[in-house]
Image (cartoon, rainbow, N blue to C red; front, side, top):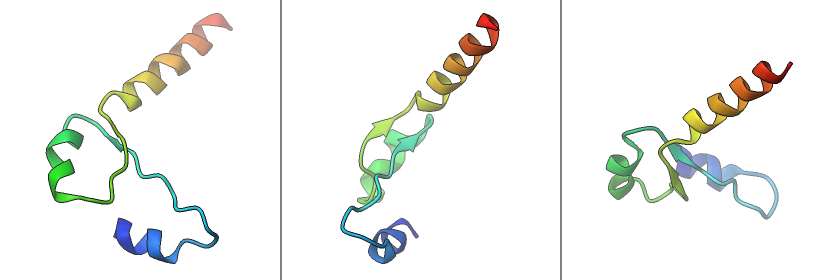
Length: 56
């Protein structure tokens, strides 16, 4: 599905596909369309959101 989306993407720049979560590194050998692997990206985003809420 990712390969198809990238092929049909309008414009010259191809979208960046970031794999997140604990299984990202496990799936990487079978999915050549993944660009970077960021296993903790979701957790980083939740931490940033929490920090913003605590400051208010």
